[in-house]
Each structure stands twice: as structure tokens, then as C-alpha cells.
Image 1: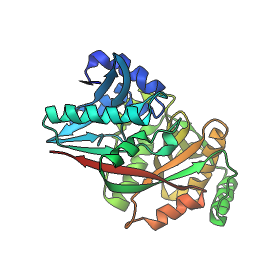
Image 2: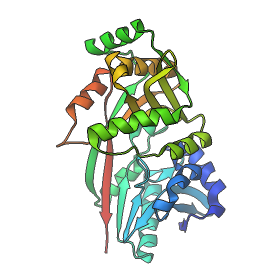
Image 3: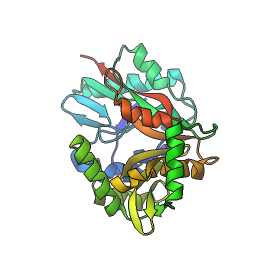
Image 4: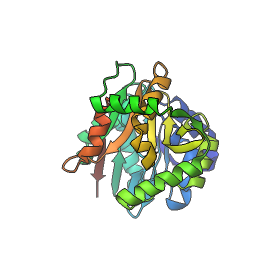
Length: 309
């Protein structure tokens, strides 16, 4: 098996493979990865067997460690339906030889959550386990099955009815600036952090992926009270950001917004993902309870460390 470092000469081949991968995601497209390329030393890799592309690995290198990928929510080896356990073992064997040749002695691997698997795709985790990799983190991913009957808590049902009485409206919006201002104020007040994306970065990505990155706003008349930016993939609608101002919160706008989105994608997509919450021992129980009150339950997002001499 040949391992080749990604260059722009492989862009079309890379993107086409991501498109057909059984665990693909639009954020592995080079147009998406390129928005923050200045922050990371790219070391993405392609794996060829008898001149046929069988896998790709979005990655960057820092010191003597390869990461898959700190600029992305999750990563890992992308493969098509033909990949088997033995085939994945060959991928990791070739990867290890390649990384040794580059004086890289560790791999930090963020496995792709199962809800994004269009076909079962845990061959990578099975091989990592066989190789003695250490699991260093196990975060909770709150996921709602859109094909199942919705069961809300009493509090959620009450909030939805309150928002309806206030005549709130949920609709698509392009006003990312106003929404991200709400989002930034919330994150600064509550956690003293900034959004992962700047307004311009998010606007650029939305232009590149108009069917995949969508802002849904909650309006009272023409006033934007808050909303959510969702990342839409083959079978998952993921809430990248959810933010609501104080007036919207008082009117029950967040549960109402989510209920509308669930209805909009029911029958089209399989899952709605609220994203991760830190795993044990620390869990933001109040935030996690809210996700559960909307019907979400836990999947896992795991991180592994594999080292060698």
C-alpha cells in the first residue's frame, strides 16, 4: 500500500472519494478544510492499493504528533463500502511506516461518531484497539432519532405552546452577522469563550456549502431573537450553534425552534445531533438535561492515542 501526502494535485480525487465514503462528511472536503489552513500544518494522507484510492485521512502535524484533526469536530480514516477489517489493518500498518519515516511518533485520533456512518464503519476503532491504542477521551454526543415518535418533557411542551401563542416564526435567514453577535454575547457571558468560527469564516463556508450550512432564525415580526446554524449531511442535521437572546428565552423560543427543525427534516434525515458534551467525570448536567428533555440520547465520540518508537 502506498501512502501519499495530500497536495492540490489530488484535490478532485480527494473530494470525489469523500463524497462516496461510507463515513464521509462535507467538512472533509478541501474547500471546507481550507478555511483555517493557516492555523494548521496540513499532513492529510491518501492510501492507494494497486493504484486504487482506498482511504484518506484528514490530518495535521504538530511536532512529532499527527492529529486527525484539531481543526475539525472529529476525523479519522475515511473509506468506502469495500473497506474490511483486514483492509483497515493494512491502512494502519502503512500509516505507521510512513509516519516513522517522517519522524512522527504519535497519533491522536478523533473517531467519527456512529450517527455519521452511512454503513457500519468501526474498522478503524477495532484496529486501534488491536494495536494497543489508549482511549484518552469519551465524550457524549446527544442525538435524536428523527424517525422515532417525539417525546418531550412537560417543560418543553409548555415552552413550545408559549412560543406559538407569542406568534413566533421560524424561517431560514442569511443574517449571520446578527445571529453570531447573539452567539458571541452568550458564549462570552456564560463561558468566557468565542465562537469557533468568525462571522466572515462562517459566511464563506455557507457560500461554499449552501445546502449544507443553514441558519434558521426565530423571529418576532422582523426582529431576530436567536436561532441555530445547522450542518446538514447525508443523514444527520447537526446544530453547530444554538443561541437565543433573553427575550427569546422568556418566550420559549429555543424548544419551539428545535421542534420546527425536527418536523422540517423528519423523513429526510435520520438523526438530529446536538453535538458533544464532555464525558465523565465532568458533565454539564443542566445542558445535558435540556437535550434529553427534547428527546436526545447518548452516542459516543472517542479519542485515541497511539504511540510507537
